[in-house]
Length: 200
Image (cartoon, rainbow, N blue to C red; front, top):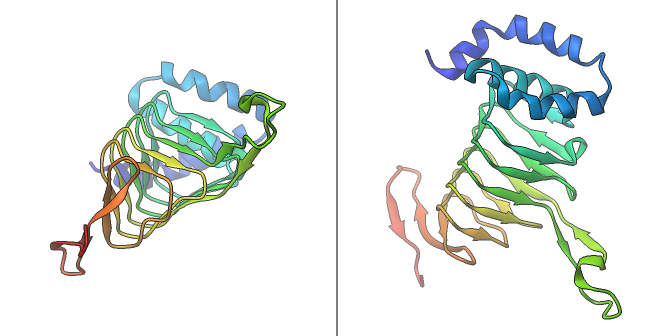
């Protein structure tokens, strides 16, 4: 049975759990998030989904989150439907983070929506103010393992970010981005075939 089929089968039960969890204070729910790693696979996935619904700015249906995913600034995070975020990812939504429908983020990827400034030379860089910028992952995007999506970046719809890439600027729709820093290496035609981008 596919994940989305299981989700629809148990949606009524999940909705009841969500209503109960919303009676608890947010700090308790955030602490419960860390404890979900101790649950068996299916129970852990279900509880993490219910906690997402309570803690995030918005969260769609059928969202899979693996073990040891760390989230900062829950209240600035939007997640669509049919999204998968695999184990050991790090999501910092300080500058807002929006993940649209049908997005898959492979393990050990980081999405960080802030960066340090360094203009004040009288202070160490770590003590300079941080600058927050929104990250937007549009629908139908596949982010490979170990990627870094940095502040201000956006990934256009139906695009792929290759494993290990570091994205610092917008990635257009229907493209494949790879490298450090990420560059467009292919375009994806609507027929589903690949062609190399001119000039790469």
